[in-house]
Image 1: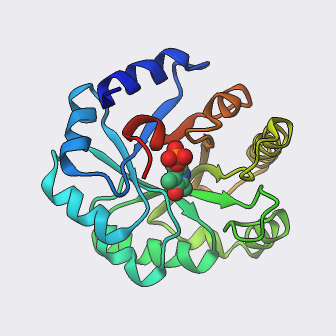
Image 2: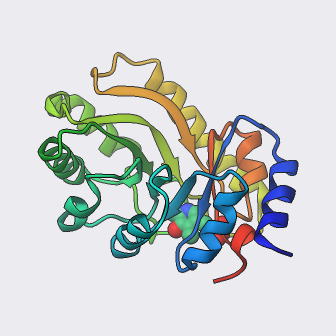
Image 3: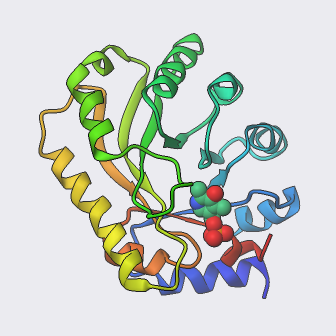
Length: 221
Ligand SMILES: *Cc1c(COP(=O)(O)O)cnc(C)c1O
């Protein structure tokens, strides 16, 4: 099936039509992205800074570029001028660097805190203790050029749908718990980025507001 057909099918299965589809175009060509763009998709996700910068230069300027992968601090400066949303913020140090680079280009960069919800050791992200530490330090209030608009998580890579569901549910619960707190003014929690090609329907059932879908649209990598 073509990219257009895949997108049509995926949109048709959505449990929540309001949920934002971020088309994950990593490793895929400019032509493939254009095909998705022509169907009206404007949100694209990449996980490598260099690829993100190159694609941004060659594609229409109304595309909203999402940085979805692990972001190294020394590379923030390359995407700060244009990135729309950074999904994988997994340390306070990274947040500080994003704030610094955003201030240089006079922007307020929207970020999601990546939460470690999977069982696997390899996945990046904050756990609840680290989050609380960050909030308690109050230092985060001084970062004026970032806005934390939600949370992001990746479930364990498994066939066990109950497990995936319970991890997504845990992220949603954490989101609600945080929202109920008196958070600094650079917080405006409204998004939960969870769900990929294999588990986006489960994620939507558990309250996802953004799904990051790659292979189901563009084919395997
Ligand atoms: C690659 C990637 C995706 C998309 O994965 P698919 O299984 O191809 O849909 C989503 N999120 C992140 C962080 C990724 O790196």
